[in-house]
Image (cartoon, rainbow over all chains, first blue to last red):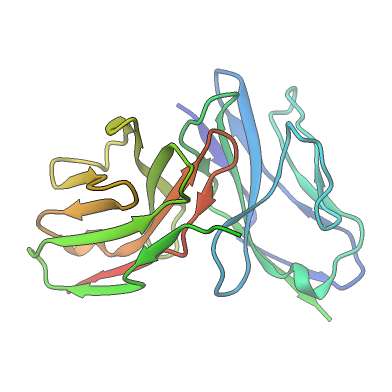
Amino acid sequence: AQRVTQPEKLLSVFKGAPVELKCNYSYSGSPELFWYVQYSRQRLQLLLRHISRESIKGFTADLNKGETSFHLKKPFAQEEDSAMYYCALSEQDLPEKLTFGTGTRLTIIP
Amino acid sequence: EPEVTQTPSHQVTQMGQEVILRCVPISNHLYFYWYRQILGQKVEFLVSFYNNEISEKSEIFDDQFSVERPDGSNFTLKIRSTKLEDSAMYFCASTTGREQFFGPGTRLTVL
């Protein structure tokens, strides 16, 4: 069974400090990993996916198949990064369901 | 930019009543999903729908649940006889096969 684990429910970081939100997964197939973000009173939206290897809003995430991890990183936190972040996975190359982690609430302290 | 819409934003119902949650996916999308999030818990997959039929459903999606695409635009989730534990945020999503786009959600409260 596929599973996504986000060990931190809450994370507070000072503005300008580096951010790392942890995500580990277990999946027997070829997973595609995503980070979704939900800002206050807004809908879930895709932040980035491992296949595109983009940097969005300064965030990056590298898929480490050996450690089965997909941690989200940003070198310098900004106040507008405060939000709920969800790691998710699906089967690669197919429009399959998403399996979500429990989410991490990131708060940036001014 | 096109968006997934959901109505109502909040639905309050009595236990045992039927509810229908409505979603309008993005118009050229082919795959549709329902997810739910009980307060304080993770977002959970309920059902996926493609080519006018269910393509996958979770254990949560029992006989009390059904989905329909009654016309070319709406995608509905029906709960036949609501239980207290059905209280949750219900999200609709749609995709062409790449990124899933989510609606704003319907908060269902069962009293």
